[in-house]
Length: 492
Image 1 (cartoon, rainbow, N blue to C red):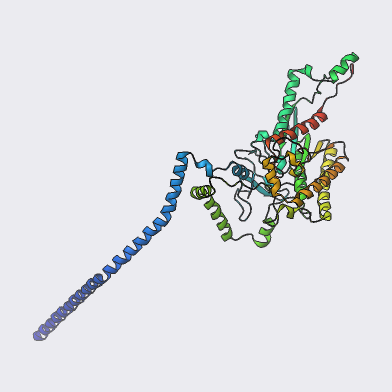
Image 2 (cartoon, rainbow, N blue to C red):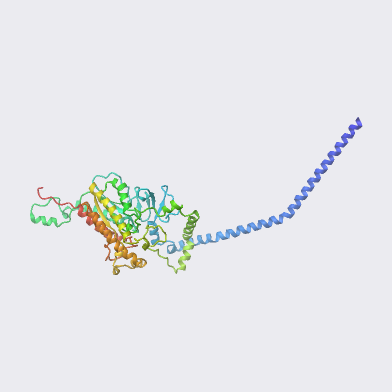
């Protein structure tokens, strides 16, 4: 037995030694394999790493060179004061400030809709669209009510306050004016309040409230300037660029009436001539396409945004500036701002009535909307002024300035002729509506600038600051006459 056990132990020892020998051989073989693999792969990995590094350097150069040139261009132009030569075009800045930008209630732009301007407009089911409240630029300020006014307008009027609301489109809004104070609405407010202040300070320069006893003195006092109703006048510019009479009517009924206006100025006509007869009022452009076709794809929108971003680069603008011999291309002003059509490539002539029947339908729409405004004024004992707005087609050739001549030269002869015919129809319709109530008065401003000395128009409908002053004068005459206080007979 002992011999058998001793043999078993020796067998186990031999087995273990053989097993350890196999493991050692395996470890040696794997080590040799890994060494050989490393020896063969190391040059390849080193080469691949160098290739990747080379591509990274190329990519950095491709991106870094234009970025570096952009920063260098910015530095040089700002250091030398030359940036204004090609990065700032005052006319372009002014146009962009007044161009509508359609956004959601949260202030987000709609994909595919006009979003290049600064003046934000929000879709409104009743009005088509309205201006967003609490926004401003270097040229205008919109209060929390969505009106072009410095301060908010409370619903309740203060004691002695006389409110005058201005309704209309781009011209009434004061498009392309250099500031709020230069619009005819602001100038009208200043003139009315200045007269009240003069009446209080110098009562002898105005007609008295009671006529004197002697007949020879009566003629003398009647020759003085009539006094107007004493109080604090406030002219609120509620106009919205692009609005037609249908929008103005909706704005009056659903918003402005709640502010208890004493006077309403319905200033317009042009948008009704350009708006298709099938439309009740101006709406967000491209909205129908968005609803029916889904609007432009995200690729088209991304392409547009990339194109706009590219054009804003200093380097791109510098190349364009110097390639044009140091001159910036002036923007085209023959196309009125915020006048949209179903087709983006449509010309002004394409927007005009196709025939006399189409024109009659557009004029009838204008007249129907004015008639409802007249009815409202009559029932509520308010004063309504229907103002037919001016347009460049009435300017006499000899009175045109070089800037206006350039605008007219870009307009087609058919457009100018149809404008003259259309505005004659607007005046006729306005007179018919105004004649139906003693509370309404018509003021045809279309021929106002026939012989105006100096530049009156910056586009077919946008006026200069000086031209706004002339409109303010005309409105001041009409409102002042309606507000004039007749002296009472002596002893009454």
